[in-house]
Structure formats: structure tokens, C-alpha cells
Image 1 (cartoon, rainbow, N blue to C red):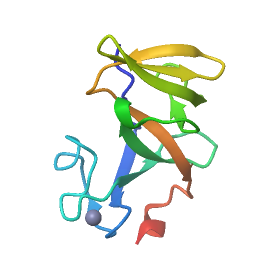
Image 2 (image 1 turned 45 degrees about the horizontal axis):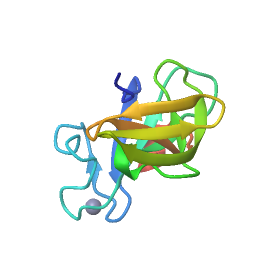
Image 3 (image 1 turned 90 degrees about the vertical axis):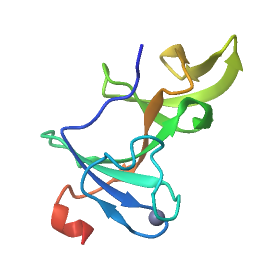
Image 4 (image 1 turned 180 degrees about the vertical axis):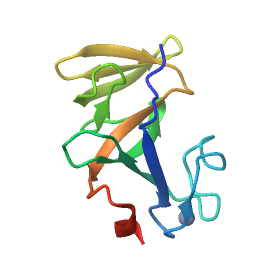
Length: 123
Ligand SMILES: [Zn+2]
């Protein structure tokens, strides 16, 4: 099963050099900035009343303890208890959810924070 999913609207910005990306074509291979290799911060938007999430996309091997992972079917976040590699899969234990098994190329939406949801606030 794939755990990666996209939000209805997303804006991309590099954590290190502030480069902005209009769409994910250039960066979705590894979720790194093509200019400086910094991590990409994803400003999401949805129609919910809550302030939208800011997330970082981490591949299974980079998910670590204390990360807050959002699962596609739940839209809740779960904190990571541990992550170990066994029999070719990453076994990621989520508090209150149990262990999920992920492949190397699965990435996860990890919560970084929240923001206003107003695109002009990014400029
Ligand atoms: Zn950059």
C-alpha cells in the first residue's frame, strides 16, 4: 500500500535557499531543491476550517522517532515510535495505529507546522 498522497493545493519552497516551485515536476523524485539540495517545505491547502498543514515529505528510511505522519485514509497524524528495516521493508510503528510496512520509494507527509493558507503570505 502507498502512503503518499497530495493535498488539493500545494506550494513548494526550499527550506534553505527559499527557491519556490510552481509544481512538483522538478522535485517529486526526491523532494529536494534542484538548486541547493535543501529540503522542500510543502505548504498545503484544503477546504477544512483548520489552518492548513505545512509538511515535509520524507522517504521511508528517513522517517524517524517523533515525526508526525499523516496517513491518506485517516487525515489524522500519528507520532512515530520507531522505524526499523527488516526483510526489505521499513517497519514504522505509529502510536495508536500499529506498525505499517513501507518500501524504499514510499514517502510520507510529515507535519512541520501550520500556516495561514493565504498564498500571498508566502511572498
Ligand atoms: Zn534550495
